[in-house]
Length: 300
View 1: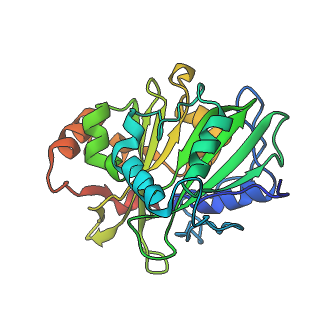
View 2: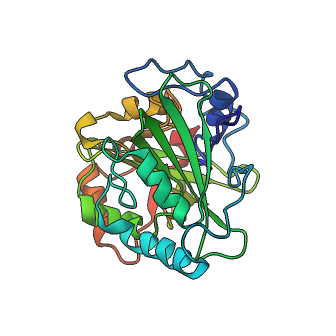
């Protein structure tokens, strides 16, 4: 076991807060109380959150598991395309609240995954497991990362970073899942150090899914405009849990959304001309997708 807790790359809106939180130790899965985190920044702060590279892993993906190199690449490629033949919140055939980690770990290890586990800062019986794989569709050195939170050998929560979810682009997710329970937006009023991050959060409490899509915004007059949202960050948990966004942001690691995520994110209807249903109608059917606009003034 390592003495630190492994983490993966986060949306631009939560990177600074996550660094603060993890520096003090991780929080805990419900029903355990979450660890208090540092106070989140306000919209008027002078140093906004910044994009981050992939979190470094102390171990690199193995070139070969129990499968041959060719078979391992084909298997990972298949999972990226089909999600193991199951629907979210099931992930690569692994079901939160049901699948035993010993079985999932054996499958992941078979095609060359590096698995970095830690029990640091969490209650007895809980482990965080950072899974790192070489991206079969990427350039040399590009990786796929996921995190599995395990209690008593059962996977409780899965967090997947982009590159692992090409089949869950915004339009595809809306087509599969329909109207979310809530939609939130984060932006800055103007670029900072050459970047203008825009994060879009979709929450499906009955399905056990939270998705955060990120885009690089531009300023057009008095509006921030985001036109191309990439692959999502996915938080997946047992459907029966019926978690609110507040539950997600206060439970480890169904965040690392900040514990007071509303300091950063705002309901979409308050910072754009779209309600939830109109948002789904527009972005599910638009090809290419319509740009999302929000007033710069709303983020000052």
